[in-house]
Image: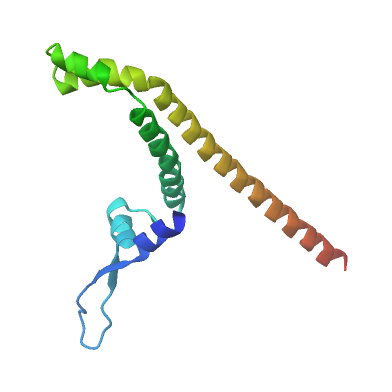
Length: 142
């Protein structure tokens, strides 16, 4: 997912016209456009990492919530519709109350997945620093 976002932000959308004869036109990418509008870099920066983590974690939430809504019996909603409720009036008190546990589960799964990924990345970074530190110590003692 992170690689797909990186490719998306680095993909040239169009080329600006060259201002001088013989000059190469500058490619406009989605990452550059967002960087210009938001006034901070989007790719290879903390916001890009947060966006990638959010996109990966949301996939788990969508899958869990989809299964939850697929398992809800439509009969209760149909009874509410027969009693005069419209679809939006029947959705909140009936469907959302039945889906509450699945949505809480999706929230927990998503949060735990994102936190575990963050901790794993931190752990790998610490291990990388530890390996580099040992390599530096070995180079100094030799």
